[in-house]
Length: 88
Image (cartoon, rainbow, N blue to C red; front, side, top):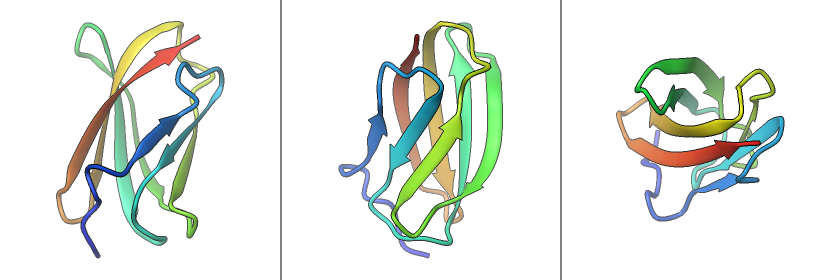
């Protein structure tokens, strides 16, 4: 597994409605652990996804309430990325 380029990732669309996309500068078959944390610091979503060949992870966030969330992503070798999302 290769490292994720911390300077080359995207979270889109943001603000998000129901489907969130995470574009990472790495290619397929890598496990990505995604946590979505609310403003109070509680983990709302914890998921393990497999990165598509395109470098895109797609998540259904339709069950999240409107508000601001923080996202933490980690790969198999321990690289960690973070970002803020706004749920409409």
